Image 1 (cartoon, rainbow, N blue to C red):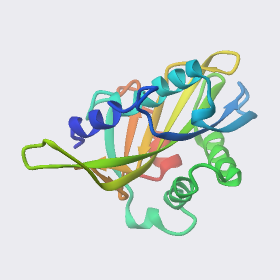
Image 2 (spheres, rainbow, N blue to C red):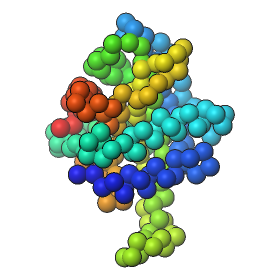
Image 3 (cartoon, one colour):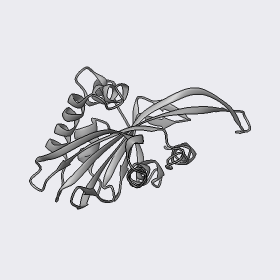
Image 4 (tube, helix red, strand yellow):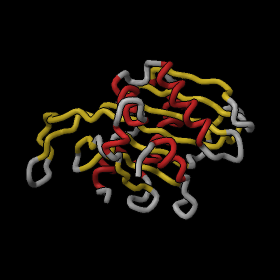
Length: 208
């Protein structure tokens, strides 16, 4: 189960003035499922309006209704072997999305396995959160105990020319559990939990 307070701790920082997101990368896929361009940029170099627009998309995942629209899934040991998607996500996280070859590999997997009825965009955000220490009474002590480095990915139908609409699904990796990074799990968002994109969980993420 996902603790709602853990997710709110992340979303409270997702404002243009407080964000620590370092980078955003993404690609566009046309109606035929073919690659239609990509981008990879320093988040702070975006205009104010573009930062706000992208933060709204990223925030969709951790701000979702926990344990309904946002659920936790596990990476079994066999899903963490060399060549796995888990290993790819670890590499994407560790390079801060700066390796375009890794990003292209991820986009190729999504294009091959994701089920879409129209053109869509895949956006990936990289963030580092200095988790502040808290006393037993939950009062903030101020000094950081740990850095939570993570990715947020959203898959969005396009609402206009290269204009991502409301995310259809997405994920946060690694999961944020008990205010710590949880490398054995991933938090997955589904806009419609009654008609989830199970291919995201099983075929793209390799989780269960």
